[in-house]
Length: 182
Image (cartoon, rainbow, N blue to C red; front, top):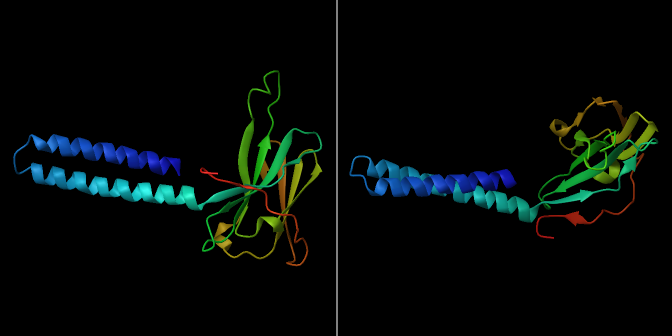
């Protein structure tokens, strides 16, 4: 979302520069330059609205982290929620902790290893060893295109195991929402 706002700001600056540049010119170039400036200003306003709409409407829920047995990796379920008209966008983030004397200064390697269009409460994370993360997920999905499972991140092997729809409906409550304005 921030990238969209930065692009909108850049387009706005280019638009203003074109408008000012065209001010000292005579026709035939004045009209096309000013027309281009107006189009860029319109695109900038549209991107600004899209970016602000995303900031205001979308929230993120971060569930409690699940640490590996040796404490060198942490997995967490995350949900992006953009309102009632949008479906679920659940993912699992895996963070590998840094090794060595400066490990407290750096966060380590982090990546999204699993995505699904299903409720975040239907996902279950389990470590079957220090190097194996097992993700249990429902075998149905509202949007099959929004499913991905990585098999490995660094030294960690990831197993994605589907279950029948009545198996693991967790009843834990949603964590507090994180948004730009809250």
